[in-house]
Length: 150
Image 1: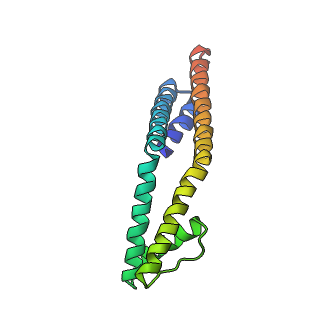
Image 2: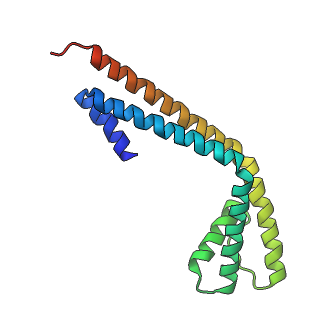
Image 3: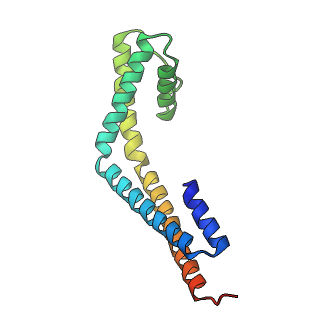
């Protein structure tokens, strides 16, 4: 991303059609990748939620079994804070652990379904900004081509 930004800035400063054209091409490729990732994420949202729940289960199991698993405890704490369950609690008994796991699974599902529109809005905002960047880079590139050289 830094390289792409450098191409745009340096191309505009040097009034280089080549750099601005490369900047435009990179923006088009990034835009296409972001659209493809967004479509893939929307189509596979159930699989993503399943993978997140599986990751949570593994972290919870590791945090319960191993007292020295600080990374797993941090992951569980982050999950609990994210789904508004409170602070991280590691259960010693299997029954309480299963109850909390099922509760967290439901809250993870609710989080994905409830916040999906926010992710969509953010993606649309990024897409609009990238479209403006592409338009302005082409306007500048064409303006440089049509201007007279000193």
